[in-house]
Length: 444
Image (cartoon, rainbow, N blue to C red; front, side, top):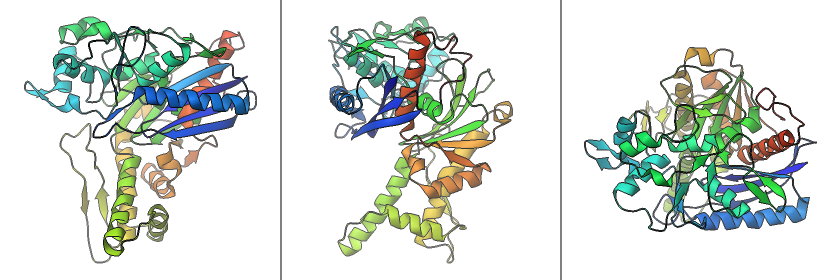
């Protein structure tokens, strides 16, 4: 009863083998992911080849598996031909074409206005709208899909994509009942709808890889939450990877005008507020110190250890930093800032402490935008993602900002582990071990 989970992140690709009987991770593999030079695009076949290579290694190490689950960075798209092979790069969630000027606004704003849905820059439908209207869709293209969908197709030798609702919703333009895309509204808005895939039914595998059932790719946010907190409604999930999110699971429905309501595998919804500023913001600060030291001394250093030490020495500071290096979805044109500089607070440790406090403060502000009815009863924070797992300073400041204790799950690589755990659960359901997934508290 082992399953494998695949997570295709923006900066890394990770695979884990999960033993469902023991509830433990038995093996893992990882590789770096990267943008194509000068772009926010990635090579889909390089990613798929890397995944299959690591899968074969894990099979030799851990033995055969019964199920394969996939999680992937959401929102992005690529195009495939009639044989199911990629004919374009993977346009990630960081693609900025939807933010380019169009008519009296931007491509994403015009599409949102025409469809009556909030479709942000970087969402697949906004990118597809821009590419279609500017004649940049490859002539061989037959379907569009996400990178997780594409890896599933490659594993199953499948020519036609089929999306889990969590992934489909991330592209923008889904029907209110989540049964498929609102092709009428999208077409009337000027979007070429013949490329959209269908949305899969619940818990059905797409095919097999070496006898193991391969399930449709789910959103990495949902997979991470599931690995860290299951379906726990007392938890606040704070995930910090390349970007960052604050998420709340609810089995019911709540009215909200902020963030996104993302379908959750097995029923219920994940209410999400996403920031463009995550682990990359802290990485930029490390790069600043490394550049400064090299400029003065000619020596190359790894700044992270020193940043941790200096930050710990300054538990409090009057310096105020808003490290919004990548802007804000909610506040157009906003920029980062540093203020409150005094003689007493003008030290490296102050800047480091203020920097992580600013990161935590933005996440807490996003949390406060959720309706009070959703925030009631939240008793603890579950932290996930390497940007929070590897940064004790950030964990300290998140606890201060939220006024709640923060826990880290023992299982690391939460998105990959969550995908494996979901695949294990779906496989058990197919055997009749679980009579109702929607009522069941998933395996943790």
